[in-house]
Image 1 (spheres, helix red, strand yellow):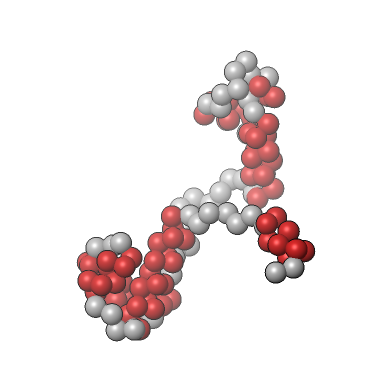
Image 2 (cartoon, rainbow, N blue to C red):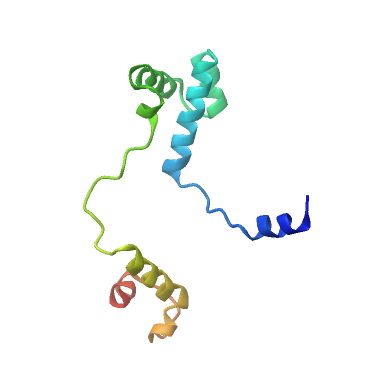
Length: 116
């Protein structure tokens, strides 16, 4: 492997998967195993889930294909901050509480609210 490629690869940081992403990945792996004709109990053991979950996923897969097992968009109230504002808050929090005039470098809900 060329050293240029190694340096580029080592600089790439991949964020860890979120719980919903991991759950979806598990369901997509189950689809692959359904297509191989594996038994429910074996799939459950391989994925570390209960057989009831595998049966439910299989029913959903049979009715709607792999798309039926994809994550649904989050519901609820729309966010009050846009992406740029979230980044501003993140940057402020990374500076620490003392950088914003607090005695101790401890973030509390009240302090975060004041900064926001």
